[in-house]
Length: 125
Figure 1 (cartoon, one colour):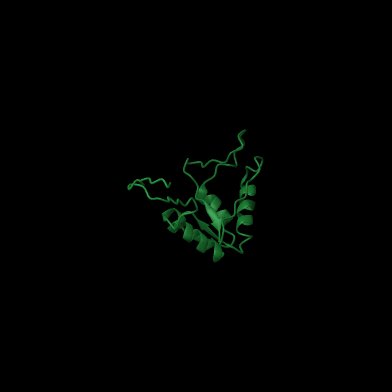
Figure 2 (cartoon, rainbow, N blue to C red):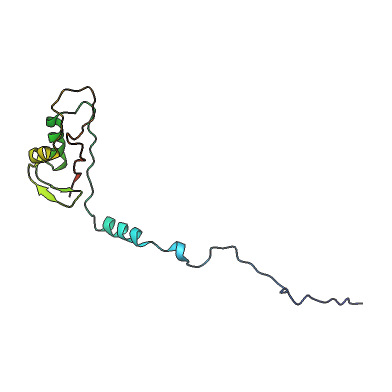
């Protein structure tokens, strides 16, 4: 003889769950800053040049050579952190503007501004 039974009405008879990746959501989209970074990379935007000087290079001549290297001896334009652009052999003018106190004999290897103001940063374009 066949048995009869009642199904609960609250739950579905067959409950199928998907554990696969869901559809697109906000986390899958790129932020505006990421899009800008990709655009600059694709368009080959100029990059900054960073050169670390050895500790023993603490005289005006070494700093001047460093600026010549960054500007490729005047072939590349130098851009300061304030957006000012300079081209050519500007190392002497920049060193005077920075007012570096590196001519004095001292035991420390760090370069400091004589007036304790921070010198401008420069990068090549």
